Length: 368
Ligand code: TRP
Image (tube, rainbow, N blue to C red):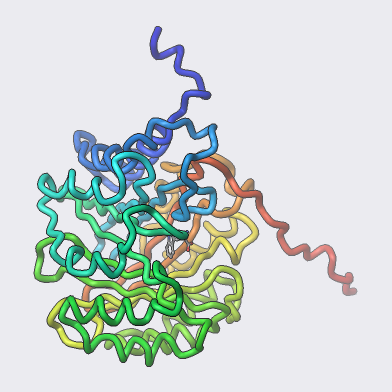
């Protein structure tokens, strides 16, 4: 009878998000016996995992619009692989850094590079501002999970952001990477800003440093210019990606476009990969329109659209017309480390944001 007494009012953050994550992993072909993704999610949420999704959260996270501390993504790689990821903030106990210390040994994580920049990006003991430390948990079928951390270049105010990134890159032995990023991606004064500084936590020689720049009110050309820093990118693909998914040429004056550059330590000043993130939820009336556009871009690049539908069904059973933001972002990545499309899916643990009105053709004057 224990089962039957679990009412909707008891739905916890962990129960809600672990169901979504598990279904998502199975949808892309995980072994059903695999448990590590669930263990990691439980550890990341900590005590916050036990809280009811029907009560306001103790800490409002900026990971997602509805203050959920979790966001999922599915990466379609040009090599055929499909990767499930989870962006999360440790908002409960243990605190953000303690989560890492607890899982580091088990997952063979290397924190040297985080330790090298910690005094820059984690100057305070406690969480401050819109965000301090986020994690990405990366799950590939049949492989050990990997972790990545995101740090906030704005943590000591916007006037310090450039120098934090510059010093961070210097400490990671890629000081020469900084000036080209400024030249290609931070061309428009206050409109272009460092948004994230991210580190892979594994021990592989390809462990990456990623630098993210947000572009307020950008045109397609601004993203094309930012991509030019990376050898082998194609501006025509960026134009097409933005036109198809954003439904416009520009300006992207809702939530900002974001560029990211991936660097491998010691590989010189040129980043090996470029990614462009479109917060599609600002540019569509509802998720049915968002899904149709994402299906179109997946088809354009010859990816399997049924995987997208399985992934959507894994996280939500609501009608897609009834809200906006389930599909939060879409990104395009290009370069040496591989190319592909990633679709970000909200957990909507706390709230579904209401749809906007679709443009009405019936309002046009009738022609005869
Ligand atoms: N919710 C935040 C935003 O939209 C942070 C974020 C979550 C984000 N996932 C992202 C930013 C993917 C860029 C790309 O800005």
